[in-house]
Image (tube, rainbow, N blue to C red; front, top):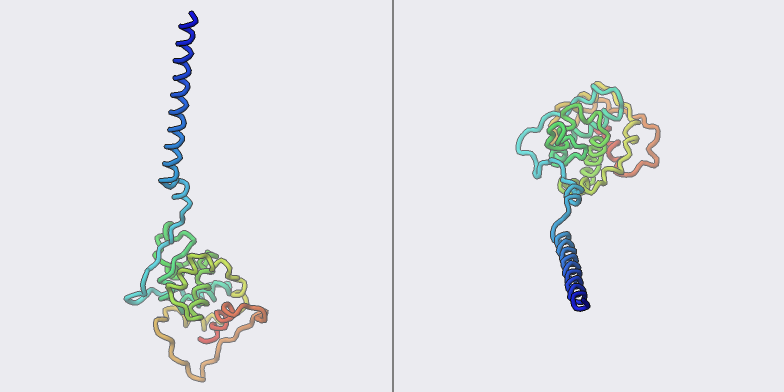
Length: 215
């Protein structure tokens, strides 16, 4: 009787030991696999860069919409600036999701239709692109900054102040900005700006607003 109990005890102990070893092996294998392959959540959290053109345009670009058709000053001003830097906008992505929702191929497309008039992200990116281009940065350098999210710091309220005559703004529609515009005669009256204040505006945003005087 004692001998049978001893045998059963040995068999039970061996079974427990085998189960424990198998459990530890399974844990180690699972741990190694988790380190070897990225988790589905990590892939989901990775953000792809939206659509853009990697190089400058090889032909004529579509016109941006005439700023004169917009009632609010901010939209008029942003569309005015967008018309000045079409080749740069052509090479920039837009992070509002319009590439997937409406098939836009670059930030420029947001201003060849009405999308840019209703999207704060598009306006910020366009204003940022213009101000950075005036600092002498290339489209590639601006693209990196947009991908890094620096456009989020743009204060669109700075573009609410200027009140421009709509008949003067219409001159921006259809302009080819690949080459600088020819100088106007002295008889053409300059555009007048009536801002609330410009004293504390950052230099880059100030340059963007003051550029509205040039044409």
